[in-house]
Length: 178
Image (cartoon, rainbow, N blue to C red; front, side, top):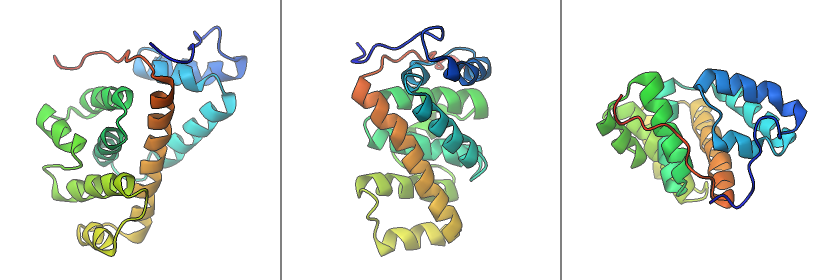
């Protein structure tokens, strides 16, 4: 049971309605995690701004591999369910690949390096080693892309922490039959 009462769209502050409506149209439902964010129009706008700014940082499969690795590393079951849903629905990623991503791995070597690096960022609280940086560089990531991977890890950590703090109930559709 959520530790913070989540508003319906109508109960949410009016300045969040446009964002909530767009998200509901895009996803087909209004996730509890967004309802939580809607309690603070500033937090919701910041989240959407960061999400929008980072949307083209790396390819979508790499972004989702990072999201899954970070969410698992942060122990956020809500975000794991959300990103499993998004990954299966948007990119038709196979369940075996999703399982690898959750572990900070991938069957694609370059994506594996990104997921492993993102997981190391979480595991070390950002204090990665020179060897960690060398490994992600050796996989073909530029220093700019390493900054993007770090920013993505921080973006996912934001929602991980919010959902963990509030103990948000998982309301994500089951994708096992996709």
